[in-house]
Length: 127
Image (tube, rainbow, N blue to C red; front, side, top):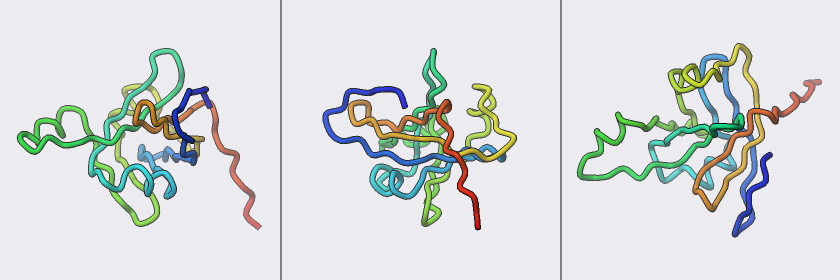
């Protein structure tokens, strides 16, 4: 994970990117950072393989414009937050042919979740 100077202890967990182009935020991070929002904005770093997921405060005066311009809906599945973001992943060449889990960390200074695509989580062997 890329070093980030934080003013408080960061929340860490995992994000799964599925082969059907869904981004799934694990329960710990979803419950602590995303339950108060219905939409997120996705971004990348220009030099590093990072995806940023930021909660969106919807402007009550013109919510449809803000949503359609740049936000993705985040669905509460009861155990994860799921974002269908095929267009975003393909646009940035992050389409996955296999479902992969990555290390993720909440960066409080930027109010965003940082997903490090260079740090996949090794699958655990099922007994």
